[in-house]
Length: 530
Image 1 (spheres, helix red, strand yellow):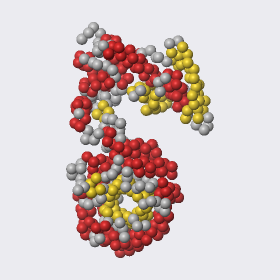
Image 2 (cartoon, rainbow, N blue to C red):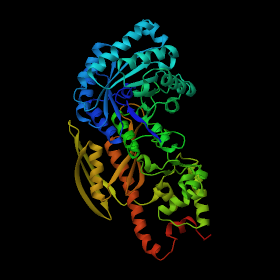
Image 3 (cartoon, helix red, strand yellow):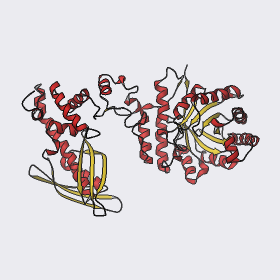
Image 4 (cartoon, rainbow, N blue to C red):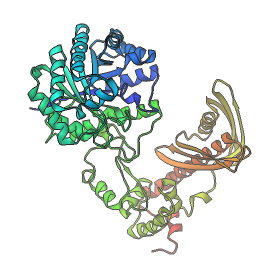
């Protein structure tokens, strides 16, 4: 029968130590609640002795988080342990996590201690922590580079002093899988009293081995793993929680463990961490990256459209991602193109697909990605030449020092003028809101970029916007000396494209009901028949 694997999340402690990933108190609390929803078993909230802010964070998390164990880190000395325990007073399930380096490298160059002195410090520190808290975890820092016989002595000292969890860190990401696995087997079999002690992994990604070594530790007997959301952490990072969890989920046939993680919360956890820290996930990041479920190669697209299991071992919905993505680019095939046109309301015949595909590949050679509006442009002899539904006649914007702003816009449609104002969190937000109100087409901005054209302060701003309207994405671009006006005009361009497509679909409905797939746009594309 499979054993439960306990997930120890250290995003708020080791992860937050990653450059650029620090969080303030409200952000830590928000992230802690998401980790609780995710279902982590242990939540390491911080290093209380490090700063007053860390102490307050551990104290606040201890007071608010009730289901998971809340752990606080402490070096193997009285001051650290006492401070950790003080911060944990409000926790429903507290744990003191104390550590001390054991490799000869650290003893010689960092601690200037003998092996015997380290053994005495371990016994005292674990015993002192145990006198305050029933649940005590001990980590021999740099266990991966510690002499194996001496590591056994250190672990024995910690167990004798009352440690309930032994964590064996590969602190510098040095180990290879067989070495890390064997270390766990050796500690499990050679340290007396291990029957009531949980072994834990803690791996770093300096050589890109963090997740692989975590799995090796599990095979060696570990039943707790320490990891972080998005794999953030010191230097190259820690083992990524989402990768470890989903590997176990997918490969239950060879990994004799299970977790109680709610996998549908993985994507939300990743996105929240990105929002709070401002550190984006790389596009090709496993499980939660933007490209994790995206397909551009024609062979892959054809397989996924027939049955997703051909190229997806995980359903996007399993990790909380809305859906996979068929990315149209120069490697895409006819099947994917025809499918996207079908979703846009065009039922193309094979000759039509062939002709559209030829134009599409020409465009794809010039652009990295081809968007819906580009496909609509192919169908309508060039989207950029279509008449605008709404024309901007007046734009005014006023901002205040508190961040609030008001925008006034006047738009003309079919000879009639509409005038309105709206407030927002900044002048661009206000402008977008009032345009939404007048056009009746509410949009959501998905990408907003500003580029200065020309040197000096008198250069003009080029604003590019992509926005979703009714589930489809459209873009706009405008250049102006006024950044806010350029943003408003770019957004209006996108809204005009959405309005045109909405009108086209409305006009096509009677034709579609009569099972006639041709339309004026296709006739323009293929003059003179086929």
